[in-house]
Length: 193
Image (cartoon, rainbow, N blue to C red; front, side, top):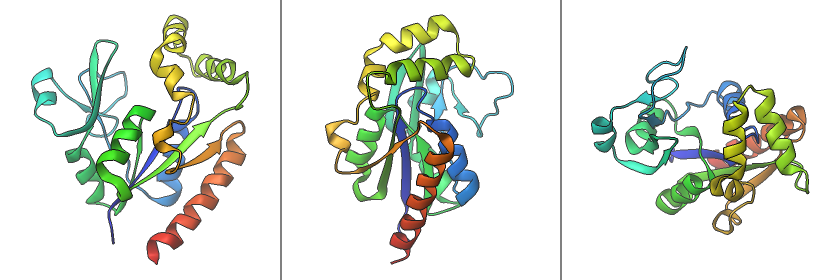
C-alpha cells in the first residue's frame, strides 16, 4: 500500500490538534511526531509530544519544513514521517499552511490535506481569539499571535492548496467530526482501490 500523510492545517484555534487527536484515535492512525528546541512543558514526553532537540541535534535532521517561532525551532522531519509509517501506511500531522504547502510540494500525491476554518465571515478572527482564550493561552501571546503575519496567512486557504485540500468548517465540533468521519470513510475506500 502506498504511504500517505494526512495534513491537518488552518489558523490557530481552528481545532487542528483536537481533530488530529480524534482522527488518530478513531481511525488508528499514527501521529507524526515533530521536533522542537524549546524546553518540554509539564507532562510532555520526548518522542510522544515532540522530539525535544538541542540546536545541534536539530541541525542534523532532514526537515520537510521548519520554522523559528518565539525563540525556538520547530520542524517535521523525514525521520519522524518514516517512524510513523513503520506502524501504518497512513499517518497524520498538524501543520501551519506554509508547512502544508511544503509537504504538498515535496510529497505530492502522498499528501491529503484537510483545511479547517471557522465562521468563514467577518467574525472568524474573534471566534479564533475566543477559542485560544478558552483553552487558557496567555492573553499577551494571543494578542501577538492574532497580529502576526503567519496568523493572517493561515486564516485563508492558500491558492497552492485550493485544488488539494478538503475544507471542513469547524464551528461545531460534533458536526466537524461527522464531516471527518464521512471523509475518512471515502478515503479508506479510495486507498483500497
